[in-house]
Image: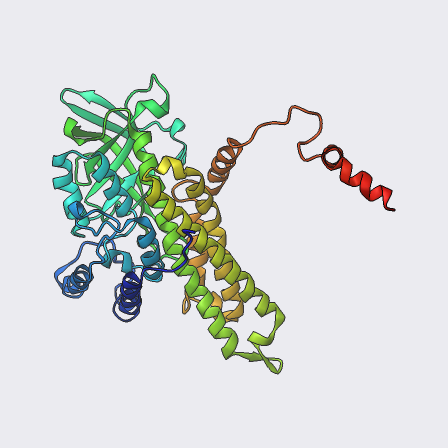
Length: 433
C-alpha cells in the first residue's frame, strides 16, 4: 500500500522552524508595516526584510516549489501546500518566503512561456523579490468571461498598440509590470484570438484611473485597479507565448493561483479555529465556560470537520499536480477546491466571531477581515458558480445516460437478477421452510 499521511521527518523539521519563524519574526510585520507587503522596499524597511529573506534562503525554503534553475528547491506543490499552511497566517510571510500571490502564478507562466530576454528582465527580479507584478485580465463590463473582453491590441508597424479597460487588476499600483490579456484577432473565438503582453507600468498610456479598496480599508488604501490602456504601444518582444495563446497560458496561471490561495486559506482558517477554542476555554457565562455550551461545542466540531476535509482535499490536489505535471488533468479537483474554499473560511471565521461576542466584530481581532477575504476568494480567479459548473461538467464526463426507462440501480430489476443468480440456493431455502 502506498498510502501515507506523514510528512518526511526532515521536511517536518523545516516546517516546525518556519512555524516558529513566522510567529516570532514575521507576524509582527503585519502590525508594524500593515498593507505594505506589496510596496517596494525603502531603505528603512529593507533593513528589516532583507535579513529575514536571507535566513529563509539559508534554510532552503525560498520559492521551494520552483526548480533550482529558477532559484527554488524543486519541492513541488505538495510541500508548498504544507508550507503555505504556515505562511497563510501572515500577510507578510509569503513575501518573505518568495511565494506570494499573484507573483507565484505570474512567475510560473513566465517560466513556462517567457523568452530568455523576458525571463532576464522580469522573472529573475520577480523571484528575487525586488519587484512585483500584476495580472490584468478582468474587465468592467465582462468580469472574468473572456468571450466578452473588448480590450484589444492591433499591429502598429513593428509594435502592438493596446486600447481598452481592465478592472480589479490587483497590486497594479505597486507593480513594476503588468501581464495584460487582450484580443488580437476578433475574427475567431476568444479561445484562439486572445494574447498576453508584458507591459511595464510606466509605459505611456497606462492610466490607473482608480484603486478600489475592500470593505473596511481606508480611503486610498485600495490595491485593485481600474486601468485604462490608452494607445499603449509595446514592442513585438512584449508578446508572452505565441499570438492567440492567452487562454492556454491563463489556465496555467489560474490553476496554480487557485490552489495556492487554498493552501494559504488553510492557515488562515486554522487561526480562526485556534482563537475560537481559546476563547471558549477562557470565558464564562451563566455559570459555565463557553466550552461547556453545546452551541459552542457544535461550532468547534463543525469547524474542525470542515477544516480537516478541506485540508485533505487541498493536499490531495497538490499531490495530483506533482504527479501529473499537467493542470488540465487536475482541473476538476482544482475547481472543486476553489468552490469549497470561501465557504470554509467564511464559516469558521463567522463562528469564531460569534464566540468572541462584541469583540468579534471589532478591528481588535481579525474575523471581519477574514469574512471579507472569504467573499473575495469566492470571486478571485473566477467566481464560485463558474467553478461549480466546471466541476459538474468534468464529473459528468465519466458517466453515461441510461438507455432504459428505469435507472440502472432500479431495485426491482436488480432483485430479479439476484434471484436468478442464486435460484438454486433460494429454492433450497424455500424447501427447508
